[in-house]
Image 1 (cartoon, rainbow, N blue to C red):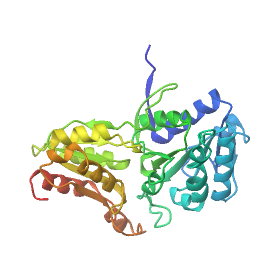
Image 2: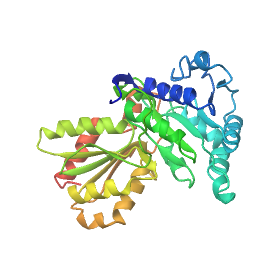
Image 3: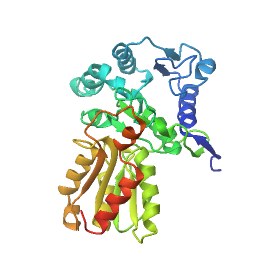
Image 4: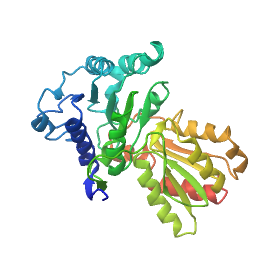
Length: 332
């Protein structure tokens, strides 16, 4: 019998995944600032400390570097830590442990150890939290060999990909857009996984491919629905994993549609869209292109505090509509 499907919010789906892991595997524990009694900065851990106790839902001191070091060490010794950063921006304080330790130990020790570590990063703009609390830094970590980097865009994928990450022998970095936490969607009960490294065709189409990540998937789908009324049929790919990238799905889509628009919230320069563009340029799909590849990313600016400027700093639905329309109509 198929698992019962309910409607949960994104944050509820993440919390349910962590509860399933805590219940089923004594090696799993949570670490983070204010994740215990307070329930997490975005209330994602909720009442897990009451259900599983402070020994497994650990409120750590305000030291991202120290906490990350503890998490890496625990993973190396066989535990399965889930480390929550209050904001993804604070990963900058822990880069030594993430980049020089977690990502490299398997390689430097000849495969004799693994680092089964999961880190969760509430990311992105839209909450009025300004420049130091609103960044999208996933491309930083995706640049590092040894790390896997994922961006679930739906409650279904948020639960399934977190459970998949806990089964992975390598460190997995999960970027969760803060504006998605309240979004609801269908989520099966019980344990299931969504494979890391596999994109999802969120909307089939024939006139152009949009490769989007995280919250931009939903904005791209909204734009595609609007343009359908103009006779423009867009294919929307939810990349889901930005390291390793699902090359086959993206390449086959571009070969079908002959046009590519990359949409992502992070700063446009040197972002994931640049990697996707280069990947297509270096593949057989290049010969199928009928127009130059277009990247639509964030402004080369820190995220402003002013709400109007904050919106202007990252792609919005009208921007995607304009870019996709121009691409299909040959004006780009």
